[in-house]
Image (cartoon, rainbow, N blue to C red):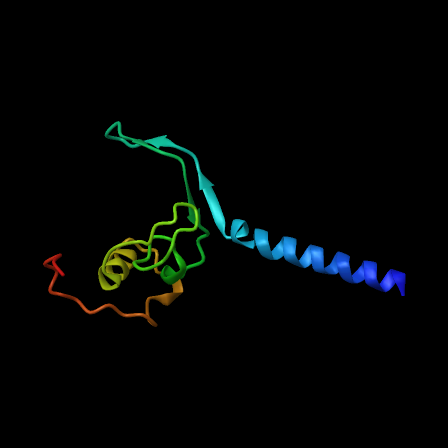
Length: 106
């Protein structure tokens, strides 16, 4: 009986630990760097690349857990830029973005 109680406590502790640390598994640390124009970009964390634009910290309305900020912007513009930059991966045919005629305005 005593072994069963300890085993249950250990399983619970491991489960809580893994659950609490799971957001760290979905993030990459990017070191600071200089752009070609000489601008320094501060180090930051970004979500892992998985081909889905909807779970990125920068997708409009999503919360960045490291900064506590909600990403601003228009989801349609974000998806259009994401697709333009070739990052849409396998989602290109499933998630179409209506064109505004290429004016760049929303």
